[in-house]
Image (tube, rainbow, N blue to C red; front, side, top):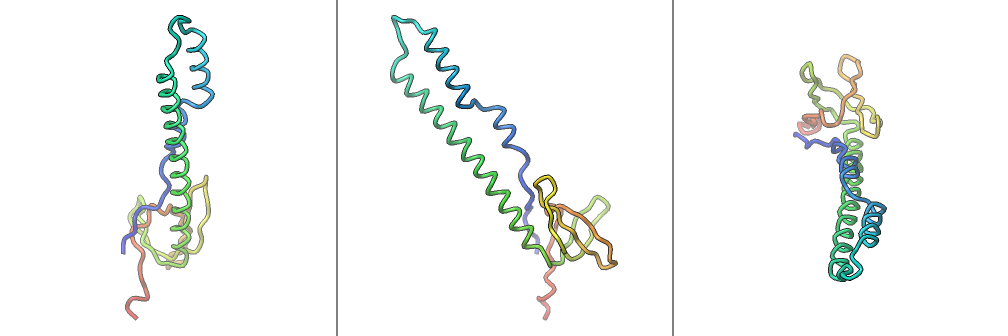
Length: 140
């Protein structure tokens, strides 16, 4: 039985944070706009409300992104823990290997599996390298 990739998503959050405008930035831009506006034609209330609504939408999108990233991390950890005690096939650069998952640890916030092979050697692999979980109890 093959399982879906369970590794964490790349660091999208950092890229999004660098590309987005924060609350401080928005307020700075808005105050600068108010300071340099034409006193005879002040900012229209509709424009002001539209800008606030756009900023609110951006803030909600950023929070949703952060929450989604956290949920993916929790899901990845949960699925990794679920592999403990299971026999798995793992895709490696040198080919495939199989063994029993005996431990799970976090390395830089990402799950790492310790797999005991039949010859007694230990193998460390990412959950994304697991290609199949072997069900030894199906045959009876």
